[in-house]
Image 1 (cartoon, rainbow, N blue to C red):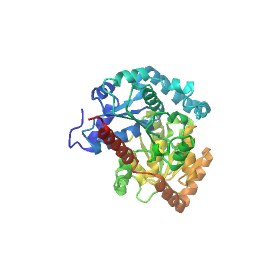
Image 2: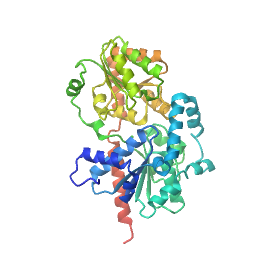
Image 3: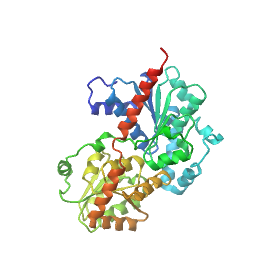
Image 4: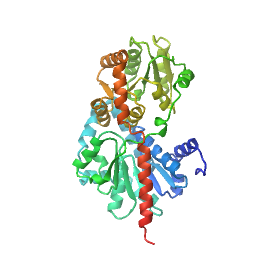
Length: 409
């Protein structure tokens, strides 16, 4: 399954998707570079895959691995954590806010943090100790803590890189034995420095996303393909996964009732019932509506859209910034996505709707004032860092070459 010389980008991307779900095959490669992610939200894994793909583009001879960390070290615990996470953000968001806030400033050297940093440690170390990677990249905080602990114990000598996937600093990302942090904004860099992290260990790279979010898109062809009117503004609705059924339908109604002529593109994701609900509503919609399930060409829909309605996940936020797409944030997950929303609003690239009424009023206002949308799009582009994945991959390549140059003869 290892990609051969001359393999195209799509084949490499398909191989990375396969590798991330086949852990034993991954470990059998004895990777020089191991990327650790997790599936709590899909942003951590998406960032990991973007980095992996760029590394293979740079060097298809690189022995590369990618692990869904919790799923690998303890599938039962992974299922429990995912169940708890999904149910808390859907049904008890205040509970998740409390958990996020209460862990925001844990001392990295505290007993609680040391306990967290041992989750799965024995299983992970047992899997890599015979042929440890030269460099490990973590896009999930607990994994970074485990690597840091192993380095502190003298069991691992790998270079430890951390790639943060939201626009705020949470203590769970900060560990003693980290060689480099990659962050999304200058504010985050300053926050880390305020927390006594060496400035030389912090790079403002942006958050890594798929390179397609900086590629040109034939917008007319995309509109023809999906039956979107050529001169109609497009409102792209994503991120409804965590909404109750009644609220999901209500948002569809609110977007449809915006008086300015527009097309709503609904991406329902993997959940068939949301797709069916949106299709049912489409039959009575006053404005054109395109309903889709899971798609792998979000970059094309962002390219043709005038406005995104989303909950402000770190990767989706970054993708929209790279595309220069203004965002209206609605129902962000408490904690990290609140911070992402605040980042967009503070920098003029987004507006936040706190209620259904807010949502309708903001979308109506922006569609009726296209010059404001244009100004927001400009601000978004200025924040996007579309070359983030190349910056991260280049620094990984440089670290490997430096290690090789400094190795004993």
